[in-house]
Image (cartoon, rainbow, N blue to C red):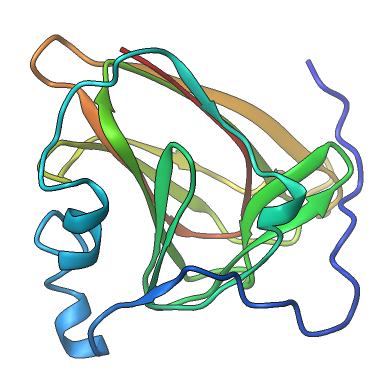
Length: 197
């Protein structure tokens, strides 16, 4: 079990916008294009949804620090970050860099894997001053096949102090491999995503 440490925020300056972002269509059509039909995601996946050839781990490096604007597609080594109606940010925390939201609630983000995988392990931290979090594991059609709801950490006296590190792991049946994770709701810090065939 990890001891929760306080979060170190990015300095109070405007974070740089990450390069290589692709703007998604206007807000009205974004709701229809968050899945496989999104042309930018389809292009980054090279028009196919193959099984991952080997185990990989997606962490967030120093050169990836910065803001991912709402409605953008941002490719990383092993996954693609697709933001919905809210910004996301890759920032420094006490235990290394994390992907997180910029708001205490109403966050909206998808992590689309470049390949489909049979096992997904995701290490996340929920913060005391946020709302409840919804995570959904997505199949190859970008439909949620399993959901997890995490309530914000509360102490015995119902004050809002501390944070909670959690590792979520999902094993899919053969032919039902996973292609991504949907995150909605409260603030969450994602430190790593481990993907295995």
